[in-house]
Length: 434
Ligand code: HAM
Image 1 (tube, protein in one colour):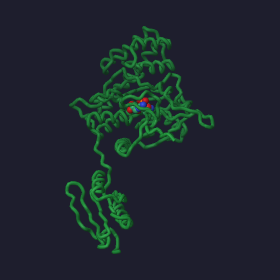
Image 2 (image 1 turned 180 degrees about the horizontal axis):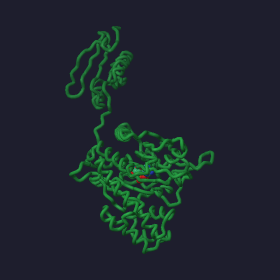
Image 3 (image 1 turned 30 degrees about the horizontal axis):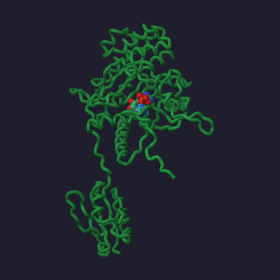
Image 4 (image 1 turned 90 degrees about the vertical axis):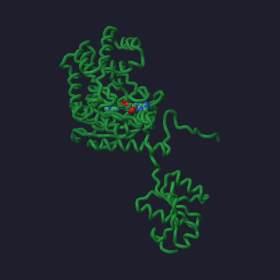
């Protein structure tokens, strides 16, 4: 038989223990931050109804589905994101769900996209979403959670210096009201958003041509593109009426952000659109400013009409997704990946098979005290056992030869630089004289 393929499926990852240590560390911080803001953890199955992601506006995600028909002829997909599942779960509970709710999750998601730095076909994504809060206070709270995570994992965001991460924020209602004045709304507006999100990846000329295909003429396209160049509230205020709901919401957001100590991190930037058609209000992306990874490391937005689009009643919803891959790129480049030990405290080394039983008892006694203990059954030579125990970061090695057991003792060696060794009675580990 020819050998099996040893590489994981293209664009997916294997997690060896040293890789999983980082993931567990990162998820631990994500969970701690979300819980500290009163968010509760939830989850759904990685298999979802494909219909949830099939949107008319031309979202890229629709083309990236890992979808298939199951044996019952159902059209299913591996989820590319969690937000539609959240909407489905909220709709399924209906009036039984006392709003508002604040939920978080760390789902694994699958998208059939071109792999490149920071992007694979499988990733985990920390999601925090607030359901039933119409105020931009929810957006400010969510951004503060992202900032807190960045701080906890070692990025520098303090005022006074150039922050290593910034929040680029816009509001689709700015563009929405501007375009409504040109007769562009509803499905056409969503389709325009999906297209102009490609700006930068394709040229303005190509973009204008694409817009032409969905009945937005070159003059309108030029005015749209000019609006995308707006930066900062002051400049925005010169471009749209003072009562534009997007402008009003951005102003309020900045005020609330100040009360959470994150206003210095926010950049109003009309070029931020986001590629998902369901967003209706605030949209934002988190960008690393330090190093060479200059893509979004997280993104979010308000999507007050997703439940309605899925056949229910509209419910105010807002949240974000924060991937595990881009942030690792950033930390690695900045030399901030944490040193995470394997977490082994003690190794017990029976020198012969006859000492296995006593070794097991010592290990059980130590584990009952909360120590993490491995028994080395390899019967390899002493120096190899010491080396391996030290490589694994153990503090102590318990050595059990036939002579020691006969004397009712074991040797306990401190590993590392000291290597001090003492004899300890087995009785100390709850083992009576044999
Ligand atoms: P998204 O911008 O498509 O939004 O993804 C959010 C984040 O997930 C990205 O910023 C990135 O960190 C990570 N991500 C997405 N695709 C990949 C990939 N192929 N490889 C690595 N990382 C990736 C959403 O998914 C929305 N559902 C977020 C949301 C939640 N909006 C409201 N609530």
